Length: 230
Image (cartoon, rainbow, N blue to C red; front, side, top):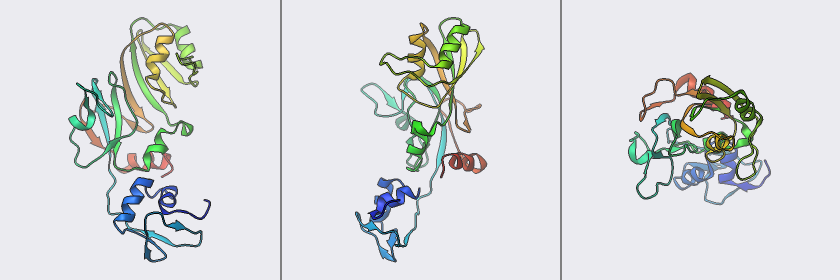
């Protein structure tokens, strides 16, 4: 850490809250610097004592997203997850799963998790089951494993790919370019018929019904947060 730094940045780097959440804690009088209430924009010195009380209870949910629902910013005629699924508290989706895809998405009110999970430098694994429009060849599997040059010139990272049935394969990614799997298949002359995300790190979809959600808690949550460095 380089001092002095703004109080919201200090709390974010300490994994206490995102900068936006830190500002809300400060406004609510829940942050003190050397026993004095902090103000927005206050600078923290290395020798300062920062204390806080966070009354917000962080929650984490695993949702089996149906196809045709969008994750964020619905356009005319579209419906988003949060418009359709009613959660007990206000939460937001971590990342995206395109409208035509279905499966696991994690929602939370913990702003610390976003960058930790989505930053590709952290290489967190996400696994998918994909159905394509024709039989899968060994050449297709090897090219997918080695990385595919997409329509914008980007070459995808090497990844684990396994044929599950003649027209089905599983793939594990550590990156998340927009509609990446669909674009990878298209570049190799295949069309995706169905795409399901089955796991994110240690969180698995298992037999969660489509459109339903469950809380992530206990050992599963502990391992998830630990692997994120929280």
